[in-house]
Length: 207
Image (cartoon, rainbow, N blue to C red; front, side, top):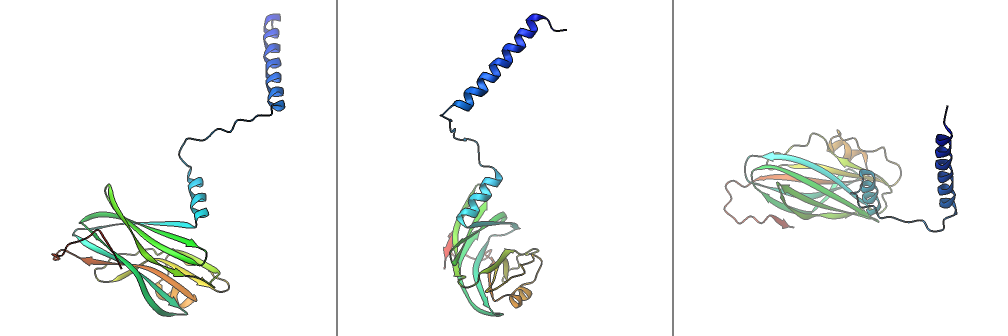
């Protein structure tokens, strides 16, 4: 059985708790404290969506100095209309990562690429394209892409229809995607062998 002293202590504790709760309920000022910790994954994703920004990341390794040339290819109703934009990154041998920034604002999409090798990197524009009138949209990276010297490889594809859309599958071929949608925009990358080149090699050269 509890002693009188124990009972008194519990009663005082409960009374203090009730008083604190009542004080909080009657308070008129509620402190707003800044959160100093890093953003969570969900918060970062929400910020990117608000800004209309998507990121796609890729990694690769080439054992010699080389260049990667990026372009935009636009297809309308199954036919290639143009190849535009572009930028060339000159890189040394080794492992590299590529980050593709896709910024959609209103009726336009802008593409930018950043390359990284160890602690350094450089960013450059690839180009932009109008998507006006194509309200049903789907986009994403293509799986199993691999660099082949002298060949344009599609890394990322945007597809649009004026009505409905089924959505791009990452394992679809470019020919299949182009045949299915009214508008297709592909970001392509081409590997160039620079081992025998004696010309100066700026890290990035725009179109």
